[in-house]
Amino acid sequence: MASGTGGNYRVTATVDGCGDYTDEVTINFTGPAFPFSLGNDTLLCAGESVVLDASRTGATAYSWNTGSSNPRITARNNGTFSVFVNINNICSVVDTIEVRYSRLRDFSLGNDTTLCQGNFHVLSADHGTGIYRWQDGSDQATYHVDSTGYYSVRVQIGRCVESDTIRVAFQDSVRVYLGEDTVMCLGETLCSGP
Image 1 (tube, rainbow, N blue to C red):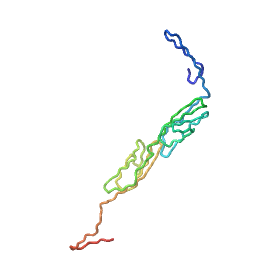
Image 2: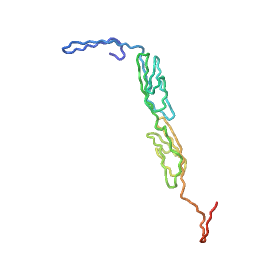
Image 3: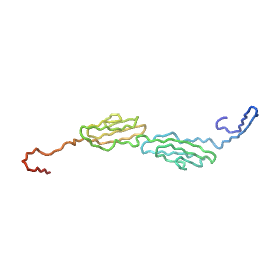
Image 4: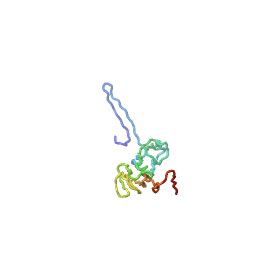
């Protein structure tokens, strides 16, 4: 039997010692062929959403795994979305689509920071395989900072692009100025003022 071909179909089974058993069925297909797809699985960038459209001519009911009964829903989160579409109250078709967000969705180098002189800071933009470009043109996922300045990076994974800037300051916090050296007599008090 060819796929999608209606008609009468008969089968005969011969069972040793019991005889032949025959049955017949009639298969009818109503209406035109109904190709249905929500599309390919998709990867979204931060801030994006996608409208999933199951509307079709002849559709009489929609049942999404989200609980919606609308022909269209908007996906704003990671997830697997599926829908049953009832066609002319005769049959149902189903499709499923996977929606994922890029790992860059929550990208940040962190807050501006101040460190003591002599220390260093490692900035990380590592989100896996991607393209990294720092303010000086370097292309590693991490960056070694040992002087005061603004540091920025542009990260691209697939078609998604994010960037961030951070200010890192270094200061010598162990310097204390007590004033000029002074000679005093026993019992005297040294006052310091502005």
